[in-house]
Length: 141
Picture (cartoon, rainbow, N blue to C red):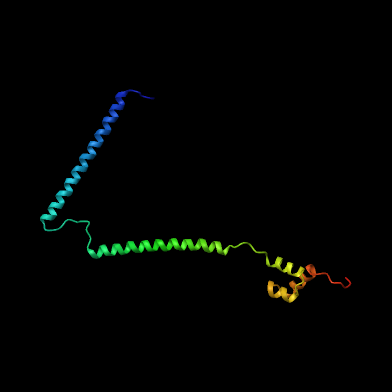
């Protein structure tokens, strides 16, 4: 059911204005009560609570803010270093040690060279030498 009567819209607008007026009245009364409490505290010889802080507290706050800024700067530097380290620790991929050993065996490297430079054990080096090394001129079995 849709109601297009303009009087309903005016009634809703009037209701919203009334609620706004009530909220304003409540806020004004709360403000007046706060002023009264402050006046009563002043009469009793007490100072109302203020936002002013002592010099020591202000200096401590300033030092805390400076420390927070320094920590933030250091965190940014660490993040930058982490990105730089990540770039340097992931260099261009190099050939696998076995590929390097195979290449060396094809070029005539000895078993001792393969074990020393490629980290292979003697059996692995001898196998690579037999598979990929220069063919021997002697008779094959």
